[in-house]
Image (cartoon, rainbow, N blue to C red; front, side):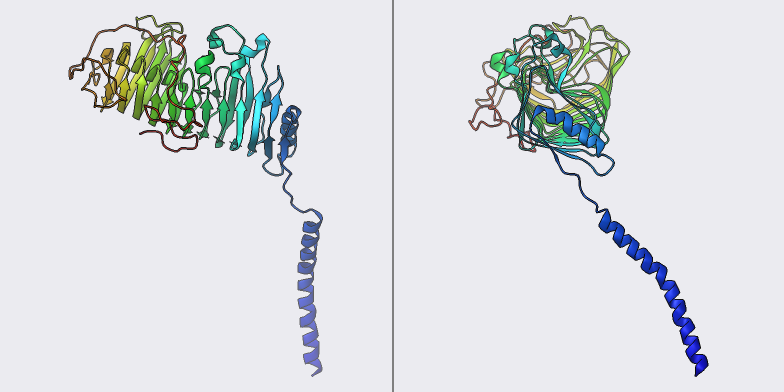
Length: 455
């Protein structure tokens, strides 16, 4: 019996020695968790102009702990001769907005070279739902845009990257160019540009999206402006989807300047209404060492176009094209598929292609643009797909009237005339702004949050 008792005592002592380290470790971990609890940094709120700088500084200082959250709580006024520089947001920053942010007028010549709001960072989410950004363009507009007159700042510049998302922004009254996209790998979703006031007050060069970046998606958006809805000049893998463009110069490639290279633009399911042009590609007459490749326009509806339904030109010059194409920019592999609708009776051309000797691989499929004529030259193989199809318009009040309609299946050649001067202002719009509910012809665009625009 004595041996058995000793054996049991040794066994219990061994168990105790094994358990002690575990108990000590658990106690230490519990004490550590209680002494240094994990907390989420508080949201930094912007309520004054000074808060913009304060919140970016705080976000950078705290970036090592957790993704930062900044909330812009309007009304906030950005004073005259001031802008907002958020180009150094730390990775993963989330920005939300409520209320209105208004930018007071710049009066110095510096305005021509700056942006009112710069946003940059990796994996940034900028969600403007509930907010409005007002650039007070009416304080600057003089019909000259960036070509002279009153000094005018651009509105937003984005240098975001690595899966950033810019969404639900309502932007109005841009003094001139609205969004400069210079950072890659970013999605722009449900963006509203309302520059409709500029139709009557001299808005000009109010481009919506100027793209010089790769892996960019723009979708589900609504634009009313007085220049290009999209102007893609360089980059790869750019998508422009489900967007309505009103009152401007159309959905464009270019103008392409020396050294600019664009490879891969896909435009789909969009409407262009009350605009100078529908879809276009424009290369500068003096450009060299540049190219445009692999461009697709698919399922695009045109409504009440005043100049060109489709225009591809290698004679572009701001102030007026020359009429003589050059060969310094290659345009290759361009597909127009199911681009339909109508141009006005007095439009210059439904389809106008003016190439030098450097345009190849053009394919036009199911192109049905009513009104106007067609003129194509310089396309290799000669005239491929460039056919004027002008059946009589259907009996509808929204179709052009009074034309001598004919049907042609032969290719159209010859240089044609006319110009496409970006010095022209927009022609205005009979379509309502996103907040208007009146019924007009052509049909009104969807509201800002709509996910479809092609009808």
